[in-house]
Image 1 (cartoon, rainbow, N blue to C red):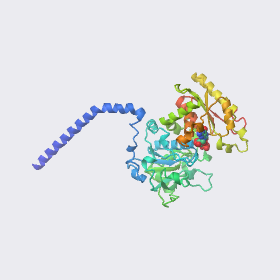
Image 2 (image 1 turned 90 degrees about the horizontal axis):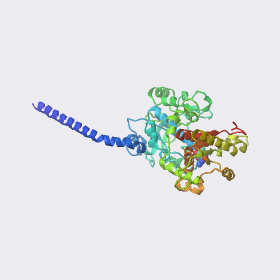
Image 3 (image 1 turned 60 degrees about the vertical axis):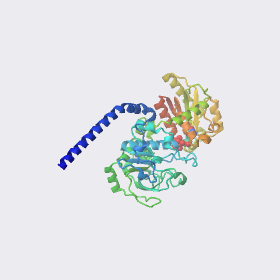
Image 4 (image 1 turned 180 degrees about the horizontal axis):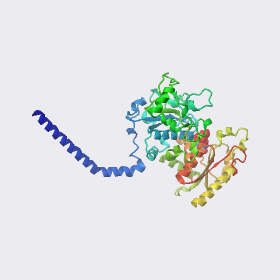
Length: 459
Ligand SMILES: Nc1nc2c(ncn2[C@@H]2O[C@H](COP(=O)(O)OP(=O)(O)OP(=O)(O)O)[C@@H](O)[C@H]2O)c(=O)[nH]1
Ligand SMILES: [Mg+2]
């Protein structure tokens, strides 16, 4: 009796609960369309439907990164330490690897040692529009400062794979790429503080097609290490071979947070693949790495002042040139520099070709030409002026003073990417990315100038 009553009561409770749930669901459904529509409509500007980092960590940044990782989510990370464009490519490769391994990438800040080591590291999401990238490629992206408190003094132990030691045959005693961690003690405070023990990736990660001597690894061989079979087979053959520097611990490569030392020299099929039309890292990630709205506005203001555009006029279509000199001199070897680099008339010939293509293909007459370069010789710049071309005068603009040391290279890259035409320096990744952006984002006309010997760009 008691049991029966109890059962009856619990039946009643279940019925009441089901009715309640049904009514609640019904009411929610009634209310849902408006908020759902709002989400969808809002998506292009706020990306609120996809971009919510809190769904991919436990909560606010923690002292130890591991405390903030979710047990039901797998992650991947890596680091970068070269010229800024190289680092953009490296993070693009990291994100592509995340895509094909179904992991959430955790992206570090950009380090400034190639500009001025005193400049603080720069947050990836302040120059690259992460919500837009995330929505375009369909995965979420985390940044290290969202996972671990940048002020944390805890040195986390972590096991990672080294690709560098496996593929860099030209180094006498191959070792993991340290990404200057040891030399950046002040900077390191601003990024993830980790004490890494390294395990060498198997020899088969090396890209073999057409490129044996170029020290690249292949995307899918590295991706296979994100899955149990290749991982355990590799670990059986290759035990952890470098203790961590600080705690002297030996940890196998982490599977929850998969990590590699350096992902710049990674391709699917051919070395230096970001230059090639089919490049998967460019097509599936790189071309979706658009600038943040703030950076776009700032670059546009600089470009307008360089072209003397009246306040109420729209920004006119322009052609940007990127001439990479600086340390590229070293590649000239015995060829005298003035015969090694393309001369201004050679550059002007390429500009005319781009103008001609824009006239015939797009029906537009482009007369504004903006030069960007790391050349510091004032005489060279006055010859640029004599050709009727302009440039952003960062000293007069006080750009570094106002915004910081990173901004001239950011603004130059954004201006390059927003031209309807582009003429660049073959072999410079800054030029490679600018020309790909101009083609992909604006259907623009581009040329890359060959150099290295007299007449190198004759055609
Ligand atoms: N502001 C500015 N900086 C430049 C320009 N060209 C080169 N630089 C500086 O030189 C660095 C060159 O490194 P990357 O950005 O990787 O480009 P890269 O031309 O492939 O050069 P490497 O990586 O050294 O082979 C840039 O990041 C800038 O710091 C330029 O036109 N404007
Ligand atoms: Mg480069």
